[in-house]
Length: 193
Image (cartoon, rainbow, N blue to C red):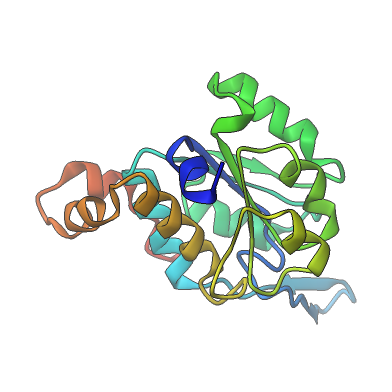
């Protein structure tokens, strides 16, 4: 089955964070107590893409190995349905998400960039690698995004799925409609985190 056919079935979309929704860099800024404050950069295109995905009926979340207050703040701003941090073995979280949603593994897409993502990518319905992904990850991916993580790779994944499902243009127009309550409720936060 080709990537487009797989994408037509997708109901749940899960992202890794570092290297997928960020460029993979982690900035550690020391505070007065000698502890580090973690900072990461997220792409605004991905945030808007998440609004479009939600408006298109996708249930969206993240699974990451790291525990990060920065990620928790951004995930809250993005209004993500599934937020799993501290997950060294990501299939545990995937199984929990599938149990909560009632969807099958074939209806789940996962976007990853490194070998920790391989167990999920080898099983899910649509495995997506970002352009900056390790070669081992690209080798199992059904689709590789044109843009790297942190530079719109997440948006590429959403656009690919919604295009395959025939809804991208409709969802964009619905998002732009000022009177659309569905668009307003699917939109991400406005900062002031």
